[in-house]
Length: 120
Image (cartoon, rainbow, N blue to C red; front, top):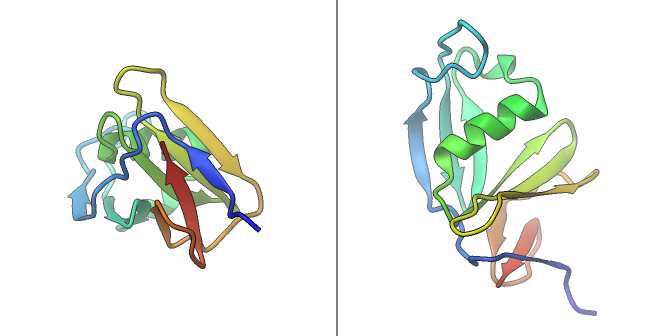
């Protein structure tokens, strides 16, 4: 059986990055939060004293947009679902919700355990 895949306009995965400081962003009105983001294999995770305060999908999307380059794809887990978003370089941003899919460890061109395939 062929693996499922998400078709991407640009076919670019957000590169790995560690300790991206998001404390100067105002995702919540009036608050500067102590939050850092890490990107590993295209998957974004948050840490810091205020990471727990990011508790809506809109807040997650706002932070994810800050660490995802134009034309790149990234994913994150929120409330038991995995979200894959592509920041459009020449097209509108897109978002795919994988309902009930958790523990995704990577985005990539090949199929694998705990991986979401992205292809152009």
